Length: 138
Length: 488
Figure 1 (tube, rainbow over the protein chains, first blue to last red):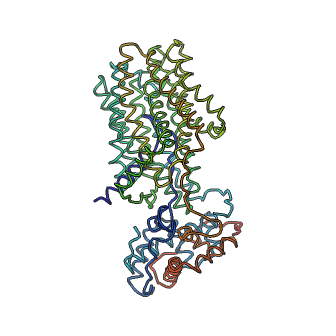
Figure 2 (figure 1 turned 180 degrees about the vertical axis):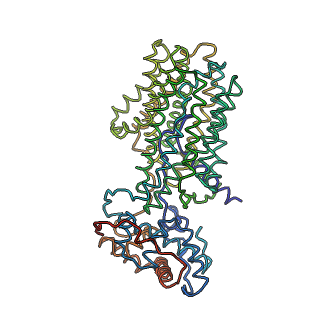
């Protein structure tokens, strides 16, 4: 309950941030960067090792691609990705296409293509970790 | 990171995807009745005092509406939230247009509060997530949200002028109904928008301690306290100018078309203020002092002049200064508050501003009932004077403002785990500059957590490569061939 309330307050706080009057907004909202891996997995500024793992990722027993469990988890996780992320992670990692081609085709810079791939891979890893060792990232 | 960020054209999908959103936001900004609202309200029996009651009722309700709409936006489709907001806008315009008395119109204003609460920040968060989905980072968010705000303020200005002319040619009441088709088309555009899958869900907070910490940050540190008060007062005065300013024109019997031109000038200050802030050197004490004196001078003009031109000029200058101050106060707050508390503090400022506005509005309304609208300008002058003093004070004590903690601690010779996870793909692709790559390697030599993380990323890639996933390959052939390749 407290957790849910916490989320609700955080969301509401984000929205009330915008300065405005009854008719017009003033400025755009400021957003903190979205990290690839949830910030709660790392120690905060007041802790002994800021920005280092709060708890190391739990080692995986295996991640056998032939295992139907791994396969289904992966398929479901891919399905949940935003379309662009899905296309890039499939092209790069499942089909092994050339990064230069993949970027050019989507009209992305190589840097953007890698940033998307990094986030997509991190999502898939997170889902597999949840399945294999019950890691609760979020 | 340390590599230079080249200015690149946005990816095609991003541009294409944001078109319906821009159309929708533009159409939603065409609210023709806004410039002549006070004229119409006077026609159906409002006085300065009942205007104040309406504004205060609005100020009391809006912060309450923010919470449920925040929860909704977190859990439900955001385009549909915008559709609901548009429906509230339609309902408010319809009820307002049909109003023949004060209570009905106040009800319409409350419904407008629902529109604002639902739409508040929703577009911003949609744009943020679309940019993140299409480019992998939020670097281009600012420029896109800037573009969308431009479209919106263009619509505000155009509809202010058109609304004034329409009201002059026909009647003030008609502008309420004439706004409806635009909102209806906006609904269609929102429904056609391809909503992001990512939801910029705020990380859950440990509620009690977070609120306590936010509160302490706002109250304890004198420098922060001062900026919080400044920002809240700027919000209050701006609200007052937009809410009560048109009453000066009503008192001087301005024509509806003039209301339109006046409102267009007022809303354009929001955009012009942003531009000027980037051009003015607000670090110079002389500049700040001049602007700080100019605000009460503009406000005091309203207490004595009987000239329409002077009233409009004074209010426009005041609104422009407030737009600049608001951005400045936001920057000071940004610099003085740690990033984890910024959202909470800004939202505290917003609520504080509404709370201050409530008694301010009622007192102004009560005063202008017995003394007339013009002397009520002293209320605005007092607020502007206080803002000026706070602004000068905060500029002259800029040094002691506590430094905000850095977003990521980055000693030049090593990186933290939180930075490493952002660089994994660049590292595996061999795309990092040598020095940064060396740091990644060095970190990986000594950190068991990151070794495991990278191992798991590799296992994930392996699993993707070797599983016969039921995936359809992206339509390689269908994409247009590129004549040149970008070098990596």
